[in-house]
Every structure is written in structure tokens, then in C-alpha cells.
Image (cartoon, rainbow, N blue to C red):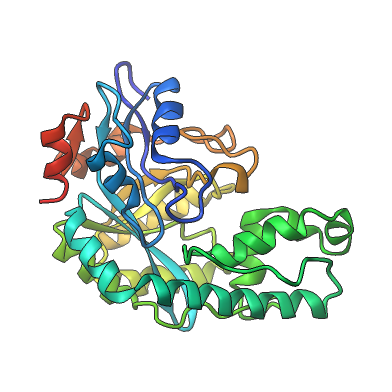
Length: 314
């Protein structure tokens, strides 16, 4: 990072999806780390931007907020994510409200929770069988069971992977080849549909964390091609799940397909212990030069003035 370059985190989740922090708590933590360019990217929700518009949350002076969202998609029957930046919040909000009513969200999460409980029951894991989904937030069923299973040390002894949120989610719960798989892709848009929503909202679409899904290298290559065919603008370069040469491989994809870069920690709060805003697990940093080709050309708010926040909804 060059002298004077802003500290950046463009991927994080709040209580409006599967995170544990409010918008204001995220802002306060980011301010303490000196963050300059940020984005709230809740799964299928723009709740943080409603909090800003209503005054329940306030940006710190000098902070630049890029309006974002992470849309859940289904690709070949598997769950994948598409990030959107520089969006008109109102356009994305209209899409989400039209597609997912509150009642339908709760019904879906309850259905997924019941199926996940049955899977865990078959594997002899201990949990309270009266658990209920009540809010309908994305991945609510998984978060409920993740927290519940980790209440009992014998569950971790029997299935150590349940102690790691990311591993449990992508390599077991969302993996069709796993005995713990539960299909939550019904009613989700395709990559093409998600990209269209983001573009219609005036934003840019980025394939999220290509190496977080636990796929082989050939599987990642196919996923990137599918995203490119769907019209994606870029790919998430920096992410807390990256290991070894993942960044170099993503750079090669970007060069081959002419893709832009985004980056962020994918912070969730207490559900991902040890993962911090800005630095992830302590070994990542989004460089300004990586996002410079597009960041100044998208919708954003600076300093939290009412006019700027309202402009995000235009």
C-alpha cells in the first residue's frame, strides 16, 4: 500500500443477513482501523443502507461508502455468490422485495432448517430439536445449526468441521457430494439474472471468492467461465479464504478475460471467529491500485451527509 492510500474493505455482512454486527457497529470498528473505502454487502439485503437513510447509522467523516450487495445465485444446482457495487439501492431493494417476501423467506429457512436437523440427526449429533427459523435472513437455518452444534463439545469431537463456519458451510452444507448437503438453491436466480439486476441498478458485477467453494482448479475455471458468459465485470481478488497461489490464479483469470478486481474480508462477526475487518485473518490487504480502475466511476457516498446517502437510492 502506498503512502496516503486509503484502507479498504469491500465485503462484509451485518445483522441484516448472516452477520452479528449492526451497521453502526461495523462503522465504528472500521473507523477504529482507519478504513477509508468500505461497502456493506449483505446477502440479498440492503438493510444497512436503510439504517443509514433513517439515521440509525452514520458514516464517519472521511469514509467513502460504495453501495453494495451480495446476491445468492444457483449455478448447476449449487449455491454461488455475485457481488454488486455502485448499485442504486432502491432498484436492488425493489428486486429483492418483489422476489422474496418476508413470509416466503421464513418458510424457506424453516424448510432448510428441518432438513439440516434431519441430516444432523442421522449423523448422531446433539441439538435441540425444537429450533425454529423466525427472521428469514439468508443462511439463517445454517447459522442456527452452526451455533447449536457448537454448544456441545461431543459434536466437534465427532465431526471437527462443524467448528469452522466457512468449511462447514461450503464443503459440507452446500456441497452436493457431502452427506451434510441441504439444497437451498430453490428460488435463486442464475448468474445471468443476478448480473442483469446489478447492471440494471447501474452497478458492476463481481464473481465472489472463487476459491471459497472448495472446488478443484478445473471447477473454479469452469465457474469463472460461467460468470464471464453471464456478463460479469470483475472478480474478487482479495478474500480471507484465499490460500497459497490463489491470488496469482485469479490475476491470470482477470488477464485472460479482461476482468476488474474487487476485494474484502467477508467479515461476519462472531460466526467467523478470528476474522477481522480490513485484514481478514491477519494476512490480507486490499490495495487501492487494485480497485482504482473502477472505484471512482461508481455511485458512492462520502462523509455521510444526508444528500450523499439519499443519492445512493437514486
